[in-house]
Length: 349
Ligand code: H2U
Ligand code: ZN
Image (tube, rainbow, N blue to C red; front, side, top):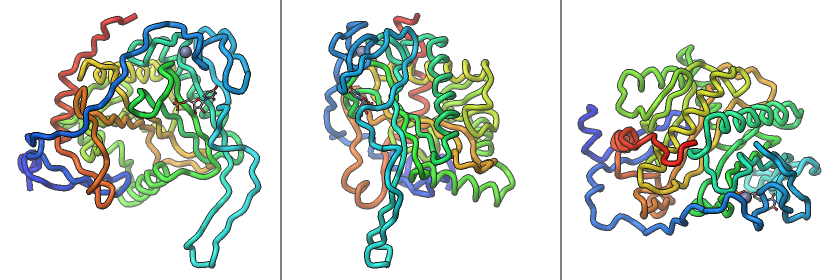
């Protein structure tokens, strides 16, 4: 089987991070019915919304008032999914690992990217995004240094389609007592790759992609963005640091700026792909903060957008719920569309 066949024939691809297969069916792109029409809200207009719980000076659900911040603002989530003080314990009802439950302590924070209610990452300047990266770096260091925190998950849900109710630019941070499913699987895969090949999974993968160039979207000195070979979501993007760094902490000022540059360019390409404010879930995967050295871990970020076109969303239903994820448009086709999409933000500041 060669690359030409995988462009035209149904086949499956292996995700080396999750060790899961995705079914790719290139021929199905032509089928007449292509899914549900998505209801995409127009981007909000006002730069300040008196009813927004994230805007400067406004009060939140618990009655606390936000400061009149002028850059970024971090606060503890008023409706946290995790709590720092929980009784520690474990149950195994029946003793056969059929009903296992464990206590899970943690912390949840919200990070406002800007005082401006109407901005999004692609519409922020590189300097403004660099300030956000500095906050992520501090939060990762601070939360990761807590003795009971083993993983710091930073993620952004953008757009109503992704369940994000508030357009004010923000992300969340959930920090856990245990390493959650996705990073845990990635950690096991990276560790096992390193012990088998004495090299890094991401460094080797990035080198292959740099040589082939068909899935590359854009890059700068410190980061590269590509549609991974095993992408599940139509326009999924993987952002990888060019050098082997396990987390945010080793990045210097110019690397943080390069990361800001890439976040701006990738999200601008997303917006210009379908000429809409493009909804996605994205998040960073730095190394766990469990006190281990993690030489196997390579810093990266995943962008998971659900859209197939401006008005069509992909649903993970049917075969995907019961068997395995499937996609029609190949990762190579998606990468070529993202490469063609403009990096010019109309209202660039
Ligand atoms: P999302 O829109 O990305 O889900 O994030 C909003 C978060 O803000 C959500 O987790 C929190 C919600 O719990 N929140 C507060 O902490 N205070 C509020 O006054 C409203 C919402
Ligand atoms: Zn706001």
